[in-house]
Length: 152
Image (cartoon, rainbow, N blue to C red):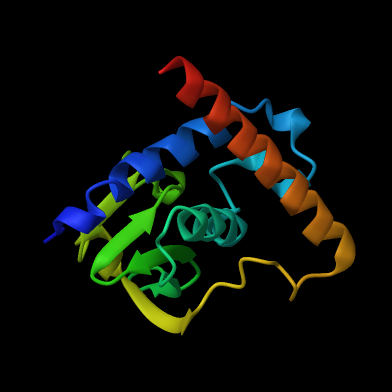
């Protein structure tokens, strides 16, 4: 169950998803994002983890799972305590939810977690070009969020 300090997690998740969805696919520097939300769950999770970290949610985990029923399907999402945070799940036919922010999501139980890690929000593990592209896209996403905040 979400406690009072976690009440804005759903809001932050929806806000980030909406900003990513409102970027023209050809305007992304990181080419894989032109397919958003398809095939970019890991990189989206890195940027979302960075955003959450900057908004006082510093202890997120990044989970990598393999579908129990279709072994060739893998997925990556975030977890904060018991709360699953996922803004790319709708790339799969088994859900049309665009944002999951809920304690122990039953939908995510379909995945066997094979790796859990603290996300590297500085992207230092990536080569220079994709790192710079992702950071440029992140700046663009946050800029959209900030503009909307001023009008909301």
